[in-house]
Length: 137
Image (tube, rainbow, N blue to C red; front, side):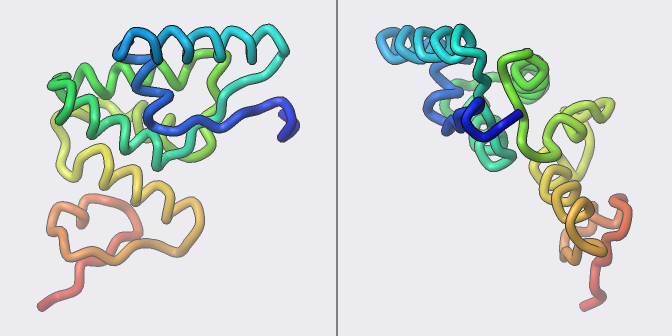
């Protein structure tokens, strides 16, 4: 899709779409999304916005982890949404709400694996991730 056919959105915009609050901003977000779709455009969402939205859903809106992950997965699968990074692949991992390392650590890892030779971490759970080294200290 050409750059002119896509509009990036930030965390506040995504949260209005997902949570519906505050109502006036949520309505404006839906109107803007409808306008873009009518014009043949999509919204783009970066992995950073997805990670921020995940934390906001849990910590500010008290959405349980599994429900937050399922909501993001459904949102990213919508035809009017274009994920720009690796989040869709990470969200497809089974039992993501119960694994350690969790979603954001796996998102960071997947991004590095897509761009580099691997990842260094002092998180012991990171040993479970491919091409990851945990130095001895």
